[in-house]
Length: 377
Image 1: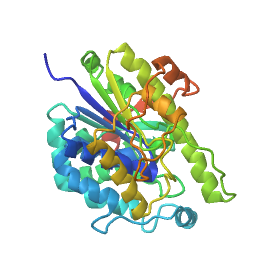
Image 2 (image 1 turned 60 degrees about the vertical axis):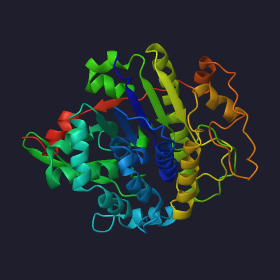
Image 3 (image 1 turned 180 degrees about the vertical axis):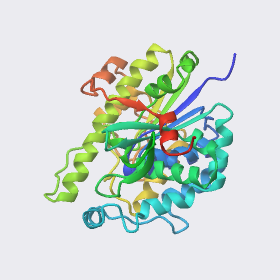
């Protein structure tokens, strides 16, 4: 009997993507990090995805990207981000802080490494939102990497930047495409606008022949945020109204994705493990890009994973969010799987708590995208 297929889905979450980055580094420290056959990423999850795909040998670069310990993490203010978008919709010189950060880490070495792993049958897929069609677009990053050369590196980088470009804070990304003899620019933004996290629709559309292999597989989902929040007053200013609105969209979108995963994993007899930032974590904000904040969230994810207190079931998530735990003896927030997270609710209750069965549409256009962006004849 062969090795069980392992799938990792990385959600959107803005600056809270530092949680998922720290969790992967902590899993390496604990010796419990799986080798993932399929990695999917949206928004902040898309920025983590290549490092997760390439494995523990890339942990140092992952930590640098999300903590700025080498001094390269830009401090981004939502207020100045929105003001900049009003004055310079595409950024200054078509570049912005996010673009420059991603460009620094998406090197020819990374592209070559992704291409090599893709030849082994592994998959790395990232979602963006095409504003021109109002659709989710899924990009097979391994196929892009296999094309090689600077043009492939730039497209790989631009897809990651687009997937994480929160509207209003970061500029949209224009991706040059071709339809027949006509060339034009498509505008892509944060994949979290249309899908917070994804797995199965992707597999069914790209490689339907692989579906039988999923029976009994392991699905790991890292939610870079919270599935429940404590009520708090929203200040009457544009920045906070926009931030909390987008946060609410992500929360409900992620809940719906978890519901679908519960149903599908049960049908395919898969093991579904997930993690999230618990409701009792203090002062969480997906628009806080201050290096100090991101280092704290990174350290929280790393510590919990290293302790073996990262993974929970949907039932445990439901119970924890209904009955928050007090801080530990040191005053630090408790980990997702900390002692005291009791499982009593069934999978049906976990599905009901998501509050709705909203559907989203995923559009897989990988082969078409490659042709339209000039990477195929």
